[in-house]
Image (tube, helix red, strand yellow):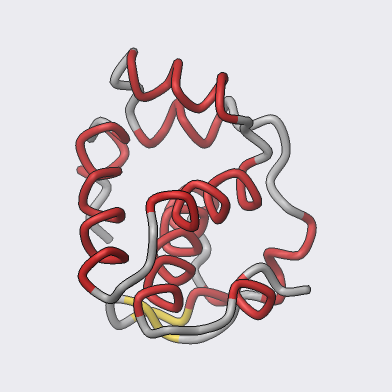
Length: 115
């Protein structure tokens, strides 16, 4: 598994999440809502990580609370079943990829946020 992503700046990848969503008619606010739901960050703490160019490893390590419903996120992303990824950090990164993917595919926010 490629661990290079751990050291990548979250701020560098974040605009790509937004672009992916916006190409499909979704919004930056929806991307943010997904990130806040997954990590427990709020607008202010999240912005600090963007400004500091925090890497993925630190971004997830400092997340206030990974949502207890992440176990409901299932399916394949980048060829891996997210529920079977053993590396905890990689699994969190793939959870986020999967949720952004669902957003871009037009899934309802309630479904994406596992309500």
